Image (cartoon, rainbow over the protein chains, first blue to last red):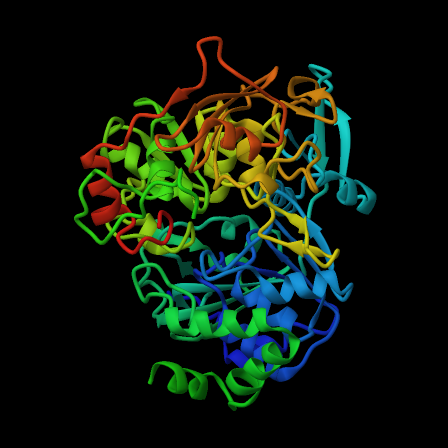
Length: 285
Length: 268
């Protein structure tokens, strides 16, 4: 018998799961698989003092920071690949408007993995000797110690528990089972560490239609599923659609030009359109 | 443009008689790859150098990308490590935790190829921030998997454009440690792997070891004295003198121009 649980929600409903001051984990990677439609809806709804976590920062993070929703970013660095840096993130950090905690990508993934498993901490040999350490030691999230077996130096990483993770997936059913095509970078531990998970899917299928061997995120982890085809635009979805080169260039040019141009971009493409259907109609027809 | 600079390569199909500095850098970078290496490839020029090695002397080399890609074999140039074009032809997909955790932290990666904004004589890398001309700070991409690669790979090769301001004795930010940080050797810091073995630039090959940096070779057409002037870190010289890098072969240039970087994003 098919499960009666139905986690389907509209994008607008899913956005309501993220209150002001929430710790939001994002699952995009530079110019791939960003939950852009979700970020747009969040910007339209208006939020403040969000804390973001993203293992490798991408467009969704830059958009949320550009819109002024974010007060803290915990990340492993990031960029828009050759399109350019995370210009809004860098500007906000330098202006003192954004508190930044930078890790190596592996160390941050391990913090999430520890969170997912309920571990008290995980040790690593990454980041030793680097200047990444000092602010992280001061924050209390990492601690220099010695391996109790060999007595060599190692770094202890505190677990990370975001309030809610948002991920753009390929296919999902109403029970929340999701498939992701291609590489999954840090998505598995990011969603498993989070107390709630919103999946925005390209396609909604019937329960039982997904091959269990290809379910990347079992429904047990998922709180809500929203249908959002082309929701990663202008970033790429592997095997489904390419990044929109022109639009990424247009965004990056605005973001690099300064706060006013960045704000004008948001006014034109996010706040100036009523919803994602209108946004996508204006950019992809 | 200085007289020592090789002629800028004309359009596709140019003869092997001329090449750009970027092409030379990709070729010299590819020569650092051994046939049996397991490589984690970083963003930018390292992509071209690693793929060139796979197309020439190292057809069985295993190329890994931090997003979770085993055995990448792309057929089109890519805008970076997050461009799905770079993932095409992969043998397997996994996670970042598998590539950087199991493969790299687990000691299975023999070579890391990284870019850099700034390096010191110990091969420590800054990819996080630089002072700007106005005295404030400019922020860049940060670590990504760069710190992890530098911390755990068997050896690392740094591939970057050769500019005097990029070689410093005191990094503005140590994103990824080399042989020593603030006088402390990497082993004492708890790091494994041999550390960085070379900086390959568009003008020279600088070997790195626990005792410092050596100007091993300058590329054909470069004046060694000018290269030394533009490398303001302590440098030693091989007993037999600094060598001259072999010229790129016609095949190498053809591969770069026609297959690996036809639009010249990285090498022109």
